[in-house]
Length: 102
Image (cartoon, rainbow, N blue to C red; front, side, top):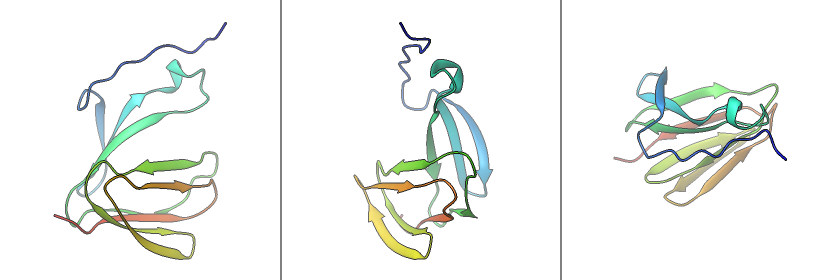
């Protein structure tokens, strides 16, 4: 038995929250469906937009790039990622993401 719920979410169907200039996130699978174990979000960063350098005290964060090119800083390391790449940021490690594509 599980307290978790099945969720089918269509692209663009999540409630959107503007997080920073030119960047929003939507909750695709909320904590109420996962027994508060995790949350899955989608997000869009417009060209030139960025997620400011920050860290999470309680949770890890993973990004999967659906389309585009990003400059990413995780801790002290900066790299470029693109369509199909995945980035994982452990809790407590600062990270910054900027859309450098069009």
